Image (cartoon, rainbow, N blue to C red; front, side):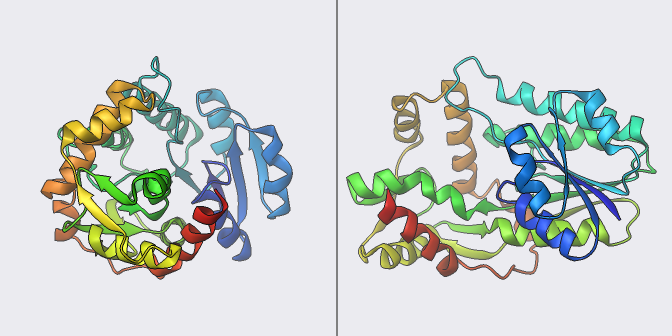
Length: 298
């Protein structure tokens, strides 16, 4: 199969590309960074260097492909002029136009837990909007919306807090049961969707392990030599003040706080728990080894 992978060689893109190439597929990886070309080609894939903001480039790259993996890359949350939701909508429209104009009939879109919500999910409404845009494509375009849960690697964001305050403090966690996921497990699920015959529209959740915040703190604490590490619950206001105090875009900070608050109340994960997936292979204890290495190096 000829498959297009967006998102360059990120946390999901790299293991996804490796798996698809190993299985004999013709893979093209889109990256906006020309410096990534050699690394992409070293994996046995073709590099397409260009911008997701360029619909003509996307259309040209998608043309002739059997399947496309779409995702909205991270952006700068500290840019106070950046409109995150508008960015999601813009790329969603670009993908939809390129899929339509190129004639691609199979799309696997990276969405998120909570994407079923029209409001109350904070920044995740961006992914909700992308899914709505893509679902307006003609019926002959078969689509899987991947809904991963909370990424393990987001826990790196608490490194400085653990070092300086000796705790993980957030407006979610503690006793809350949180579904976590490894990008490696996401990549495996995406690869399966891209290469398995399917017609229609569907949603697929991806998770690796369900743990409370306290259980996560215990696993990470033991890995970094702080066995008494605790995860404490703070108010939305405290969480917001913490994000804005380090210079984050206030609107995005408010969106993150609302998102985590929805995880705390259960709103975010309600549909996930009704459609629980089979858990992936990578567990928190596996991630904790990587976390410990990074913790000790920084």
